[in-house]
Image (tube, rainbow, N blue to C red; front, side, top):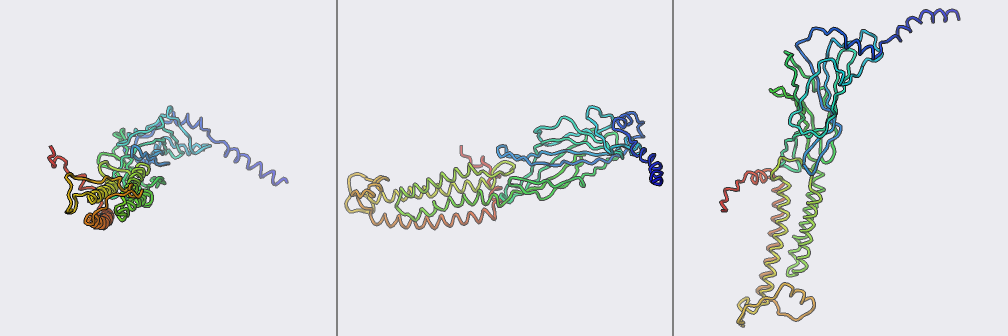
Length: 388
């Protein structure tokens, strides 16, 4: 018992000195009054942008990011590890900063909303960390001629405006870069850092559209809506039935394109998606025009003046489109002449083959040469038409 009591007496001064640490209030007073060391002419500064969430606006068609911009640098005059601090890190409000800090200007990015001030933390070794939550719209360069397999590079840029007193400036950003998660139909491939000759620092986020997302939700349904319009060519002279199928197909395409407009980053102008939509509309309208021509054949086939009839009337007569309804009511009408009936049948079969070849050739060409299609349309000079 006496032994343990003696050990406790010996350890009491040691334990007391261990608990005799410097509070944050005393540390702050010390840092504000400490004699600054001779300013070094070299500076090593680290900075990065930690993306928390991607913000994609389908209406404005731009990509934004919500995250924290973090900087760190070292000021040897503010080291306090030798003072036995209670906390190896203290926070300084932006209103009470008494040390040099870099001024940052964000380049080529439109502001959503930012925190008004930075949060500063001083570590015991003299390193300073400044962080600020900002939400920015990033400029993106997109190869939108290759949708849905296009790639985009979105850049977060900044510049320091008060580094003139330093002769040597080095930036350590690579080790701070993180690969943020993406959402919507975007895939993050890589993140890298680079600087320009104008002392501009950049973090480049390399993204791509999710091809399965576009193929399943946009291209595949649109292709399905064109199939009934194409198969309606096999219905022959059933004008009313074919018209209902064609109008339904056209309405479904319009609703689909409006409701499922793909969220694509783009540089403006005509894109591969625009080419696809134009073809879908043109394909269906082309079959509608074919139906009008076939209906004219049927109407002329009932006329007394068609197909070299021996009996000719004094005026030209044509049965209207709704005569098909009269046939359904078993109303007695003139029969379509054989020559017009056979001509219409051949025309329908030829149109079925023609439109089938057109849709197959276009889909293959769209997959293989959509980039050339888009460039050809965008590079076309409208003034060369000399319409007026």
